[in-house]
Each structure stands twice: as structure tokens, then as C-alpha cells.
Amino acid sequence: MGARALSVVTVGLVGAALLAPAASAAQSPVPGSADAYYSPTTTEQFSKNPLELRRFLTNDQPQYDEQSYVWAGSLIDYSGTTNAVAVEMQRNDDLTNPLGPIPAVSAAILFNQGDHPGYVIGGLGGVPDITLPVSVMSSPWSARVQSFTPGQLPDFVDVRVVAGEFGRRGAVYEITSNSPNVASSAPVGERLTSYIRVKDVTGIGQWGYGPSGYMPMWLFPPQLAAIMGKYHGSVGDYLKATKDPMRGQGTYYFTEPLLQVQRFKMSINGKVVSAGAGGWLWLDNVERSFNEQAQQIVNNGVSWLEFSVQIPDTHEALKIGYTKQASVGQFPYAMLMSPASVKAPDGGWTSQMTWNQQNIHFRPVKGSEWTNPATGHTYYLKYRVDLDPSPGAQKATFFMSPMLRDQEAVVSGRAVFEGLFKMTGTIGSRPVTGYAWGELQPVGSL
Image (cartoon, rainbow, N blue to C red; front, side, top):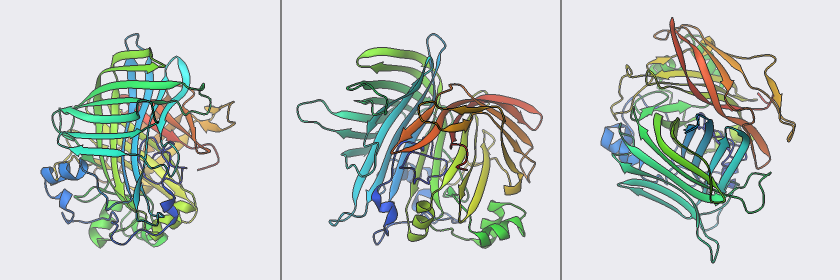
């Protein structure tokens, strides 16, 4: 998920602790705003073919209240030190403006140097309701957020395709930024400058269900009763049979799970603090709107736990986690994408394995608790995830442990532990190892 005063609910949006939604999350959408919804057919234009999907992903989509791009993962420097990084760009329409909706844009880069734990946060609009210029170009694709101070060079976060096409295997992206460190503990005037170049080795995929990649974020009691009863815990079977649109309950959710780092350089106040040519990033792209029903859920507080898992050796990826909210309960999800996955009509990889609700188990490891002395927040840092066999999905077990100890980010007064984890485990009888970007809430919040 991602930092939004954390009234967030972009399930699975990596980096949920940084960007905050505009005040519009408490208002009704303007007439004509769109809700993501489940469809068993290619009803949405972007779901019809690969060209339409690329058009959708590379252009601003003002009909949705939120559009987010988040990159996160590992940077391995020339000495072998592993660093954690997340880059977040999000537009949330400010629907409260009397002149009509205006884009409230947030952008930031979080950098956690392996031998200096704790985040440097290069932030632009890393708090709610800041309106910034945003420029999105579709061919070749680029997205840039910047802010100006008279007499100074602009602060910016910029991501662009420099070879190939957005979302296609082989595409090369460059991420650059120059912005102040907005972390609460940052020295006055400290600045973070970054350069990261990555190459997509798999192409675009989509989590969720149906040809449009619809990912629900919660289930209402009648839906859950039907899923756990007649449909034996399968959200997919329920949707196929009932064609329940679940309007306002989820997102259109796309991903590029394996972006290989070709080179990077991170500097603080002009001094290079880390550089290398190794690591892996993960890209999530999400579109959604906040209708009245969704606002009620969000405003009552949503917590989540999630691991976005990369297995570079086999080009596999997993999205496993759950959301929890008092009025709708807990919604677990677990999906595997692999080279054996079937492609949707829009050309995106789909899930090869999807586990049923009752077969997903998260177990924090006792004794792994860690308390940040600076904030007093306590987290379980190690987790065991057991996925029992489901139709079309093998038994799997995963162990998650953090690669860096202090990965707590606090923005707008809300804390989340998000960062890089080491994954070991098995899928069926096959051992697997890889990385995971984990997002954890303090003990007692889930």
C-alpha cells in the first residue's frame, strides 16, 4: 500500500507509508468520476488489447480520483551492501476546491542505506493537499513532479522510459530526483539526489480478477458468506458466477515485478554515499476512485500487511497480504505470477496460482519484536506465511526476515515499517529464495 495520512487503501500499493490522499477522501466524487469494477469481459477499453493497455498506463486518467506509480526494492552497491529504496508518485484529485477538481500530487523517494539504518526521505508534497505541477508524456513515456522556489533550481522526481516501451519486456527506465530530506530527524538543509537505471525482464502483469485486472480491497459480509460457503473460499469463482461488479471496492492493479537494476548512484548534499550495478525493483500502478461507500470504509481506518515477493532466479513474483477494517473484517489474498502464467487480452500476465481465502495464514514469529526507540512503535519483523493447497495452487511456505533493521517511516503522524526483506521457502516441493518488499503495521493495529 502507500503513505497517505494513512487513510490510504490502495491494496498492494508498495510504499504505503508515504503519500497522503487529498482531503477529497472525505467528500463525494464529482459527477462522472469513475469507479474501478469487476467485469468478466473486456468492457473497459484498456482491457481489449496490448496497445490500449499501454495507452491507459502511459496517460493521465483524470476520470479516476487516484493514479499511483510506485517503484520499490533493492540497490546492491559495488561493495556488496544492500540498500532499500522506494519511489512514489501519486495524484489524488482535490474535490473540495470550489473551482472544481484539481490534482493534488505527491512524490518522494525513500532511501535506506544498508550500513546507516533509517530512511532519508526526499519528498515533494509528502503531506496531504499540496498541489504541484505534474507532467506526463506518453511517447516515450515520462512522469515528472516538481516544485519551485524563486531563485532556486526545482526540486523534482522524474521517471522515464529511455529504451523500449512502457510495460513491455526489455523496457529500460531511468529514475532521477533532487529534493530536500523531509524525514523528521533530517539535518536542516540536507538534500537527496538519485539516479537509478533499471530494465524490465518480464513485462507487465496484472493482479486481481477478470481481463481488467480488478483487485478487491475488502469484502462485505454477504459477499464473504457466499464466498466461504457456496464458492469454498474462492473470490475468483464467486466473481465469475455472480458477476458482482464490486464497484468502489477495489482497483485496477498492474505491476512490473522484476526490474533489474543496471546502475545507480545516490548522493546526499552532493556527496556520493552509495553506487552500484545490482538489485531489483518492483513497479505497481494503480487506478481507483473514492465513492461514498469507499469513503466510509477508508475514513474508519484500514490497516494492512503485505509482501511483494520477487524470485529473480525463476522470474516469478507473489503478492501476499491482507487488509483489515472494523466494519468489514479481514481480507487475505495470495497470488503467484510466473512465466507459465496466461496472458490477458491486453497482453498482461495474470496469476498462475491463486489461493482461497481460508488457506492463507500469516504468523508473526515470536521473539522477533523490535521497538523503534525514537518513536516507541513495536513491530514483528519476522513472519511465516503458509498457503494451503487450493484448486490450481500448490502448498507453499515462506519465511520473511528484514534485510535492514530500522525501516520505519513516519509521515503525517502515522508510522509503517516498510522495506526490504529476505524470502526463503518452498512452492510445492521446490525450494525458492528471493526478496520481498514488506509493509507492516505496528503491533496492535492489525
